[in-house]
Length: 65
Image (cartoon, rainbow, N blue to C red):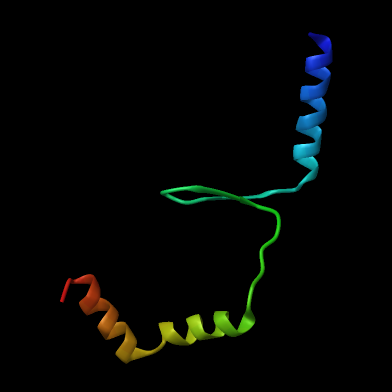
């Protein structure tokens, strides 16, 4: 039994060494090691937030129209 406990501790240490990123959302828990970002896409998302026409359409969509 002690050999099982040793193996369990080794696995826990290996898991800890992975440095996983944990993201909790209302519908899921996401674990990941690598997160890639695209500055171009981030810039598009920022600009979309300032686009009045797009925001008006988003409001209509959220109202079900």
